[in-house]
Each structure stands twice: as structure tokens, then as C-alpha cells.
Image 1 (cartoon, rainbow, N blue to C red):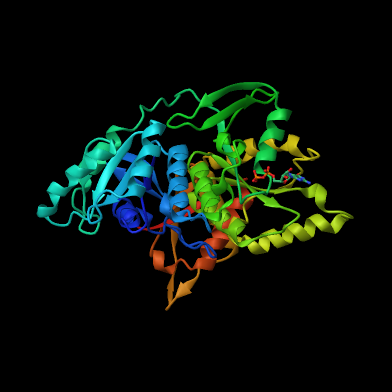
Image 2: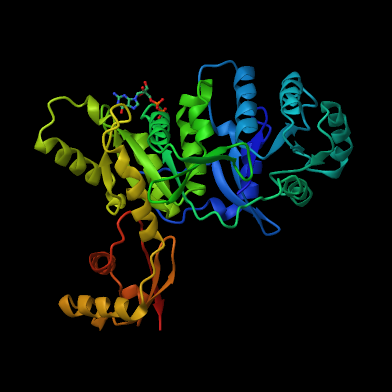
Length: 434
Ligand code: GDP
């Protein structure tokens, strides 16, 4: 998906515009415990074109002077986005800060669409011509609060999307490392590339400056490591902020078949780890939990790994399907197992189960543990079929979906998982009345 970033001074209405464009798309698909909502990243659509949006104003770079913060937000937008919406406020006229940001954006050569916000009534429209002085082309009058001018603005935005050069025969498995700062993502990226020397190419990301690296393992399987440029090219001030790492993780999730959630064995599990893992789960991609810096734990015995595993299972209950691997980017311990693990998860994520076999499993499950009743009515399960992959999605036809108690649904999912290997992938069960 192309990325659209929204930049501008505080209070010009960035978030309002962001929410207006993302609309109800922001709303929660599934509620993973411990995951609070962020409004810095959202999916949106206009005229059939899907894109992702970043509100750079939500990435606060603490204790920097305001102007520095705004400039850094502009830099994030330039680094991350395909098109930038620069928001100014018609009530203030052209300010110094606006001019500074405009200069940075202009120099970047990124497509910029200038939105003059708070044009709530027609008399104000003539004021927008002052903004030609910013040198960013035609100003678009909008009122984010009232939803005025959105169509023209979005037309201008999608017109500037890069031509999609999606490689149709790209059969490689797309994966990425995600996690909070300093867990060792860059080190893992470099170590993996060191292990797999048959690097096919550094392909420019299809829609932005991201560099994906393709490599092949000895058995000929191709992999694409997603968006490693941002991880490897480090050293920016905002690099270590929580919001930025969240935003990056969300982007990587969008582009990956399988994500590797990296934890730091030395520091244990933090809130932000859960937050990031929650997004991976909700996105429905394949998930592997990678515990890095395993070399830092001294005097390990046979219980160390079991204890850490139990802790992970307890803290990330919704990720019970994700395999866990303990590695060290430093000593390279177990890194050679990663490609085959990724490949396995990828295959499970795309797995299709024949309806006849699936129904045998369900009928056996029901025979072993009868369906629940509620107010004297018994749940009847007629038939199930797989309707999608990535992630595997099953429709179960029943007499009344209300009768499917949460715990019984969990039971059926577990039975399906026992019969077929779905490790590393979520599976979705949809109940339909028949
Ligand atoms: P990122 O922010 O997640 O990309 O983390 P980095 O890859 O930059 O690593 C952060 C720090 O942890 C660096 O000082 C690395 O040298 C160190 N580090 C990374 N992986 C390991 C590891 O497996 N073992 C040890 N001991 N240190 C590591």
C-alpha cells in the first residue's frame, strides 16, 4: 500500500483530518487485551485505491523545542511516505513555521499536497491564495471538522501515488523483524544476511524508498526481508521513540506474510512488546516470537527456557499459536533455523483443508464433547468449510450463532489445530446461521 503522511504545526487540525480520511476504518476489528488503540496509523481508501496513513503529529519527540519537533515530523514523513499532506490553518495565515516546513518538504522532492484547513465557510476561500507563496503548488481548501473539500484533496493525493510496479512472479516469502528499540532487530537483519550469502538483489520497495532484500536459502526458497533500510540506516533522533517503533512495526506488518516479534531476553517483556505483538496478531499474519540476546543470560539450566516460555505464554495469551525461538544475533545461536521456521509458518498460513476432512474432524470433536445448550436450546453444527487462506478462515454453519459459547468455539479451534498443523498462524472461525 502507498503511504500518506500528514504533517503540520500543532492545532492546525492534522488529527481531525486524519480521522476524517480514515473514517470508520480506524475502528477495532478485534479487541486484543492489553492493546490500546493508536491513531497514528490507519488504513484508508479513496475511489478504490487503498493506502495507509501516518499522523506524524502523533509521534512526539519529547523535550525538543517545538520547531525542531515539527521539522523532525517532516523528516519522518519524507522518509516514510509516498505522498505528504501538509496541513496549514487558514486562521493563522502563513507562519514562519509553515515556511520552514515547506522548505524542507520542497527540497525532498516528495509529492506534497497542501491542505488549507478550517475553511468552514465560503467567504474564507479567497484567503487560500496566500498559500501559493509556500511554493508547493495549488492549495486545497478543506474543513476537516465539516468534511468539506475532502474529495478534491484526496483526488490530488491518489493522483500522486507512484505507479505500482508489483512484481507478479514474486513468489518469495515476505517477512520482517518488528519490536521495540534495541531488542536487536538491526543486528538480526545483518546476521541473517551474513548467514545467507546468496543475496539475490536489493529491490527498491515497490511504492517507496524502502529497500527490501531478497535472498535464497540452499534449498532454493526465496525470501524477501521487508523494509530493512529503515532498520539499518539508524541514528535519527526519533528512531528510539515508542510511537515511531509502533508505526514502523505496523508498516512492516502490512507488507509481510510472516512477522518476527523480537523480544530482548536481557530485559524481559515490556508493555510496548505486548502492544506491538497485539498488532501483529490482529493483522492476521503469521507470527513467530524471537527471543534475542539469549547469550546474555548466564548460568542457564534446563529450566531457563521453560520458564521464559511460560512467561511469554502468560503475557501473550492471544499468541498461543506462535512458535518461540531463542536466539542470539551476537553468537548466531539458532539463527540458521529461522528460514525454515519462517517457511513453515508461511505454509500453514496458506494452508487449505478439504471440506470432507475438516467435517470429519468437527464431527469427531462434537461426538467427544457435545455442543452446549442455552435456555433448553442446543447448538447444532451442520457443516464447515474453509473460505479463505492467509489467514485460514472457516465458516461454520449452525442453527443459531448465539448458541456458540466462546469456550466451545475455543474448543473447536483447538481440535482443528490438533488435527492440522497451523502453528504460527491465527485461524478465524465465522459462524453463520443456516
Ligand atoms: P534494534 O534497535 O532493535 O535494531 O537493536 P540493535 O540491533 O541496534 O541492537 C541494540 C543493541 O543490542 C546493540 O548494542 C547490539 O550490539 C546489541 N545486541 C543485539 N543483538 C544482541 C545479541 O544477541 N546479544 C547481545 N549480547 N547483544 C546484542
